Length: 74
Figure 1 (tube, rainbow, N blue to C red):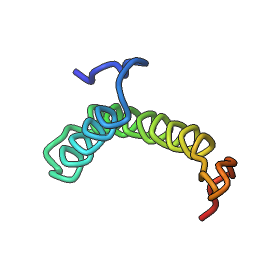
Figure 2: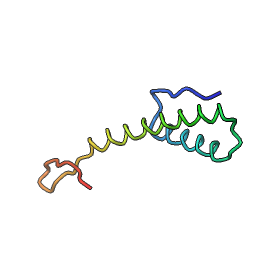
Figure 3: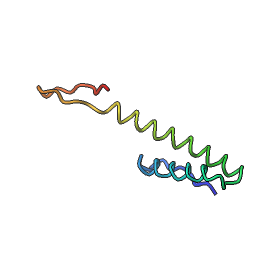
């Protein structure tokens, strides 16, 4: 059955799990009910990864030449 998403997994672990779910769904060999569960789990993992990226992005700072911190802007 579909594995529960753990809160303490790292970004990389969540991304790896998401990639596996996508491969399984793309194979087309997953029964409909299980595919729906895997899709739902995938969407939860996407949200977790997106939230983590936003959190880290908010923390990223650039150190200016004078040693002051400045928000990183793309």
